[in-house]
Length: 68
Image 1 (cartoon, rainbow, N blue to C red):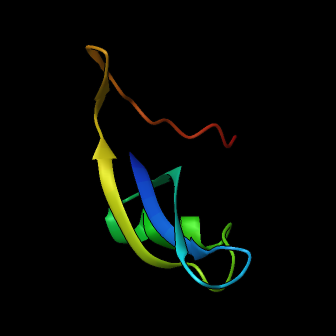
Image 2: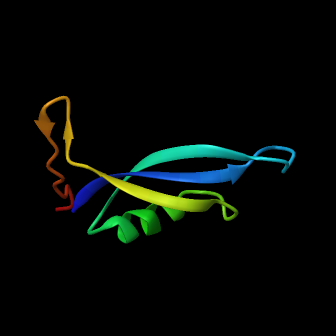
Image 3: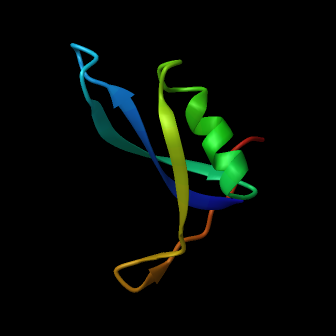
């Protein structure tokens, strides 16, 4: 599993423009992270894109399952 920043767009309150949004998601790849993010967004969200996050401020990111 890897950590991804998933960006996407949602309609504003008057449906006249799109707002940019982002969230963190884990997945086996970018498509999997986007699928997981879509489970937590509005149905009308669109333009999904995932970017892997492998390190933060010089520290490597290690994703480990907490499921027992």
